[in-house]
Length: 167
Image (tube, rainbow, N blue to C red; front, side, top):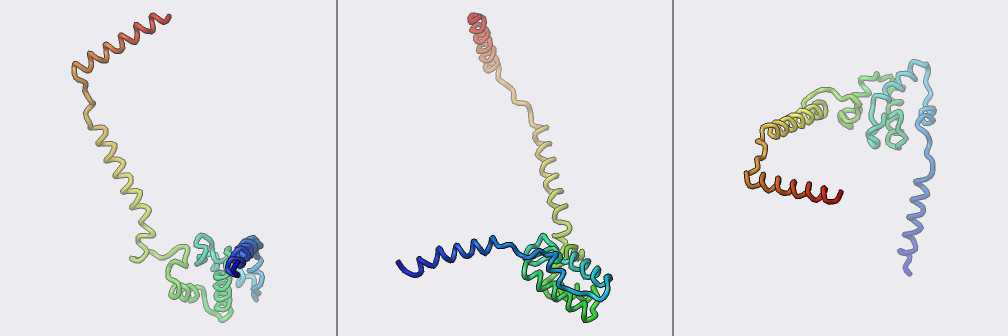
């Protein structure tokens, strides 16, 4: 048996075990930052709460446990310690990562689809639904020929006779 075949199960087991190891909670990772005043800490928490984790996408930078989020938190912390205001920090991150890094990106041509896309989809869906319902409402009732009506009456009468005999 080759070494390649022996390493595959070991590697798979190591990866599975690594995935089960608990990671440090995001709240604990925020404790590594020290601030001169409670206002600075609050400003840091607010800013990292407004920024999106680039990996998790549905978590804020403050809540994410991803390594990239930790690196970005350190960068934000460093920039705050250098005396940069929130607008400068946000501008730096947007220049580097785009509007995606913001939970509330600005309304501009490049984000129109993001802001108005859901409304457009609902509008188009509603229009198609109404059009479909109108078509069904205006469709003529299917009519039976006199021969078909006579055949149905005959079948119903035969069914009634069988029920009477069964009683």
